[in-house]
Amino acid sequence: MEATTDGTVDGAVSGAAAPAAPGATSAPRPDPLLGGRVWLWLAFAVVHLALTVVGVGLIREGVFYDVELYRFWVRDGLDHGWWPVLDAAWVYPIGALAPMLAVAPWAGSPVAYALAWAALVTALDALALAVLLRAQRRGEVGAWWWLGATLALGPVTLGRLDGLIAPLTVMALAVASTRPRVATVLLTAGAWIKVAPGAIVLALASTARRAVRDVLLPAAAASAVVVALALALGSGSRVLGFLVEQGTRGLQVEAVGATPYSLARLVDPQIAAYLNHDLNTFEIAGPGSGAVATALDVLLLLAVAAIVGLAWRAARRGIDVAGDAAATDGAIRSVEALLLATLALELALIVFNKVGSPQYLAWLLPPIAVALARSGWAGAWRTPAVVVLVACGLTQWMFPWDYIAFLTAWPPIVVVAAARNVLLVALLGWTVARLWRTR
View 1: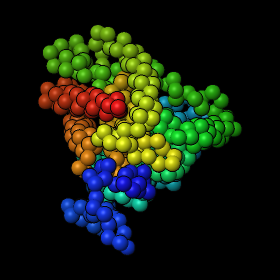
View 2: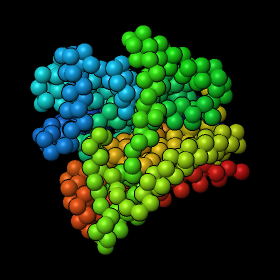
View 3: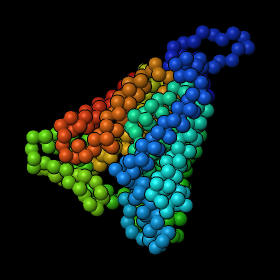
View 4: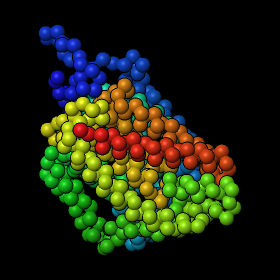
């Protein structure tokens, strides 16, 4: 069997292929259901335009509420010289200011700023889509799925910082097998915007052949640049403040760990959702909810450590998800183990998180999109692809369309949210089992 440039092995994913005729070039056969790339880019434009119209059109109802917060912070900095991290503790890493400032010329108007923000996310998505199509032999499969999942999750994918780190993660995973240092820098940059990509750096380090040279040193160097710049601007210790700012949070009503409390609201009026005014999130008030939130903090760290260990083991056992010899590359021991570990880590960051914001599901899209772009739709990745599509659709149903009903414990939408959370737990189990099943 002949290894392809993306690290896969012909025949290991889709069955052995017949020998090519002399002089013939080997190329993947296009899926007739997918059409040409013109249709793909047209669909890309339609999906992002539709989500922009819906998100900006409903800005006052809260779909792009976070974007309005971004605009407030930018205006406060430009008009009064007060900046998050530089002048006060912030829930986000300092890198989150960069995209907010990138669209600062439009900060005079809420609608203009929201449109500019959506355009920025759309541009990054377009770049990521181009990289995915170029780097992976079945890129159209992953690209179409990514568009479908983006549409299923809804306008929240454009109206949050998470919408920015998703395309960065797609690009990083798409090139990780051949350019691990580029992938590391992209993920580290993403982690300084929103923490989630930082976990993927651990997955990359656990599966890389030269983890110190290709992952740890580039990540440290990129972080050192960010920290040095922040210190030069006067941040002091606040540059790392985001690591502890989440500690004061309670159990958010949408969180997976809050599911029993959320369901209990249907029969116990003493259990209810209340607004945390400082963080503008709705949290659960119920017996033991504080202890559950504390336990989740510990379980999250343990889950991340366990998954990284499983990834290290899987990469060195040399077996892919189908039980065949793992696809390897000069830089990555097993691309399959990297993608599985990425999905497992991002799921763990959701399942064991006391915060459960709907945009977190955008973290799950990059590893599945890249995996489908490598192996196609017929492989083992079809299972998580379908589950995440359904989970995204249920999430959009809850937020934004029926969020008020969810907060007031309308039974149908409470059950929908619980079903979404059960799917996420089940998918985490599936992913961990795939990592474990090496022999």
